[in-house]
Length: 186
Image 1 (tube, rainbow, N blue to C red):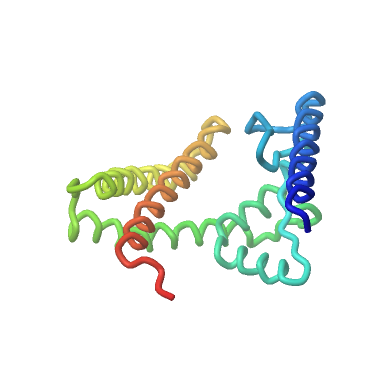
Image 2 (image 1 turned 90 degrees about the vertical axis):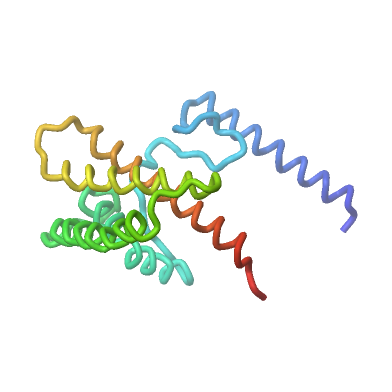
């Protein structure tokens, strides 16, 4: 294929994207985060998530459910998966998988704090140490506020988002160390 035709198609494709993003913004169909440009936007009515897979997507949904029982059970409990009614035992599964995750995290936290200690010999290690402490504290707070009644509705999602964000930062600092130390062997 001629390179000029290929560039023309790419430019044409980008022009269509710009028109669609503009239309979605004008009609206020797109949802947070704004602006809608250069990404696949969230849409009005997309608040409900669906785990759906055909062909290879089916096993991927099963892997997601097995890997993230907390996330999957929460989606079912709060009615976010269309046409799936929550069975009676889903709340127990959600509680116990959270408790088990917390109990499995305790030895890791003890090892990090007492065997390795708080370290600051380079920026990555300092960030990992600080965020690790913040993560475990936020995780403990989240577990402690779960049974509390009368809290504003925004508290648990905000604490959950903080826990998840801190976990991602810990994971990224660990991954950076691993890949900069060992790389990817072929």
